[in-house]
Image 1 (cartoon, helix red, strand yellow):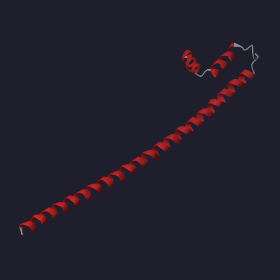
Image 2 (spheres, one colour; image 1 turned 120 degrees about the vertical axis):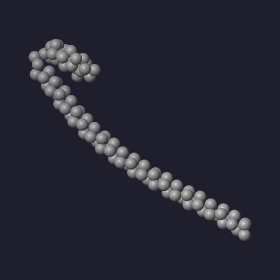
Image 3 (cartoon, helix red, strand yellow; image 1 turned 90 degrees about the horizontal axis):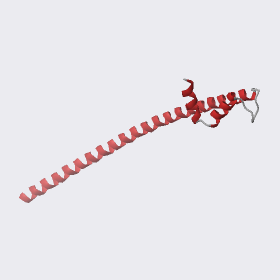
Image 4 (spheres, helix red, strand yellow; image 1 turned 180 degrees about the horizontal axis):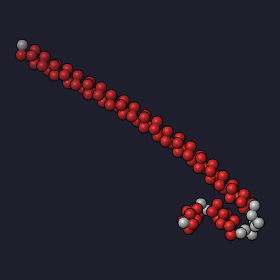
Length: 110
């Protein structure tokens, strides 16, 4: 009888441990799915942000191109000619040829 009681307690303990492990595994899997859902939401948000940045960048490039065309047309209408540019046209050429000068021109005009 004692041996049966020992076996019964041992098998109860194993069953309890097994059930506990199964609950823990289910909890871990549930947490994993929740984490994946949150990650998917983060990716969707990042995708929206990237699309917005792309749209804004396209607009900026379009505006930049318009300004370049405007500056080049103003040079075409000037009295000077290639090889003998006036100071204003020379400055336009320098700014168009070297984007880092744009920062310098803004600072000196203030």
